[in-house]
Length: 240
Image (cartoon, rainbow, N blue to C red; front, top):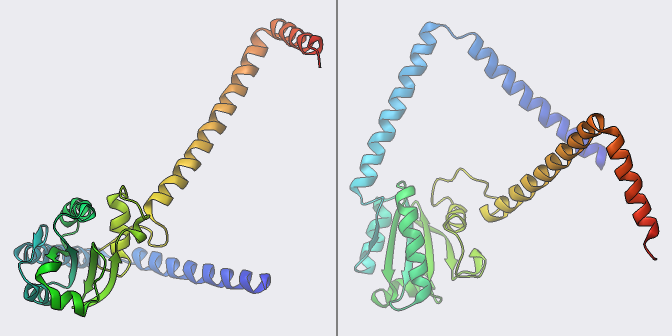
């Protein structure tokens, strides 16, 4: 089994290396005309992206808006490829927490339309989507409801979850463009980095103390030897 895994890893590494070599070879063979074409294509892509951003802003992306009725939900999903809809109820504290986070995310992800809808105004829609828990966030991609965030269970089952955790959860079905690691929540990755950094700092401090000791030893060898002898005598003199 181990041999098979090793073989697969070697094959994968070899394929990646071949692809890299191929790309490097293409770059090495580029002439001035090829570079100009790449630059021109890049400018076209940037212009197209800018036009797309303007269209998103025209559709109300970049804002966290409220739908007045359930009919607007279907219209919104037809106009926008990606929609995040918060089904809420007035007076619910957890819905206010969701509002706070979505107000932040809507400005960061203008590729997605962020909206909210009062469940008391859309009995047909909540019945059709089988929404029974408030808050519920529906994640819609290409006019299809891909996933739901029901309550705070997927967010650590606590009220003080971070905006980054909600962002990571929304990204799971592709409701937003996400550059992070979808396998692990950002809070977990942050803790791992902190542990790694802490370990490195401790190692560095230990090395520095060792260097300092050696430096002092060569400067004041007799003092250090005497100090060591005194410490040993003190240890031996202590009762067991």
